[in-house]
Image (cartoon, rainbow, N blue to C red; front, side, top):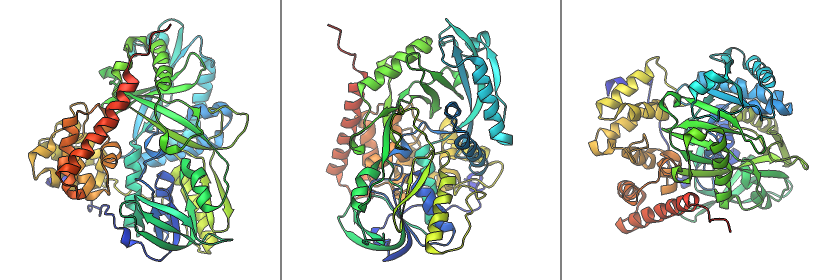
Length: 553
């Protein structure tokens, strides 16, 4: 444990939920607890503003936990001429690698090019050269070209017919839900009040936004909060919440789906692949994540209720059909699907453009005085965009401040050079296997001592939730006690995402609810009911997605 304690200057206070902690007035009320809302609240609190951050369900419960788990410049955006967007994203990638080495890690991508690819190798080479130039000194290694033989040797599962060449280049990976949670924790440490499962009922004020009526989704209690400025960072829920705000902000929603598949061969488990579909030449990825591989994403328009977005068999057909063509050696079928998730992108409305061609550029709108609404953007550039949001808020409030997040380490960033080595050693002393110990170090950063202290109380807490998932049973208890997890979905989909990484057995889910139930006020019957309900939803989705399609005719 001494090694673990040496990681941090001090263990940060963690998250505790208290709806009655809301006061009557704030400088800024942020509605929406995704990555944009989190960064906005954190930046504003660091500048000395009084801030309340509220989220209708859970932190990162929407788009911010349904991404491709990347911090990247967006190579494909160069094709559409979005050089400024890529430059900003690459600058943020370099910054986050430096300020959050526990949270963001470099990921080497392989990019195969076939004869039927719409982009010729020389165009990819030119694009990657520009990508490296825009990235500047932050890139660990410049891109390099690979001949077909070298690429096939590295990835023997690739389609060999028509394989022209390939490239290797750098981007970065992360865990989006934990990234968002860390920024929320930073906002709280800086003085913000943060409440999840807290819904905005309506805005206050007629001509000008002056605050909101908030409702605790757990108790039903309501609170009226006055605010000098309100930021609506609600992403896909902007359409619905605009009615409560009595404004109209045109947006376009597109759905992205990811399938959780088995790991790639051992030699490639630290690499990702960027592929283009044969049918429509869309870009998609194979990305390593917690011992599995993410296959995705799709990009289709969505008109329904954001709460009902889900993975459909047609999405599975689209992704598995193309991966069977591009990577036949993997041999993946529906039976290999371990999990799946879908999310929605909130984009600017651009009539006449395909879903993939709509700009990912970010914009800031003010549909009524005192109300600031961000639209679009990327998880990678959320920090930079949030700084501009807070600049505007400060201008409205006539407060002269400057942001500090561009140079400030992430809230749980380690302060010593040996943080990874020390943390892994401390975890293994507790009885964790090496993979699990290393995973915890990156997931928890300077809050790791509190996790290790909990695991030390009972060796059973060090057991894996599921053999395929490098996460310990005790982490679910830590999520409830220290990370504001209030439901089983909060725990098993975002704090400890075993529920999307593997097909959990009912007994494994029951082990979790038996452990966390008493801390959530559940009796034995409620714990059993929650376990059954979660398992049934997961089992039903997987059964629907992994079932063989009906025979033709």
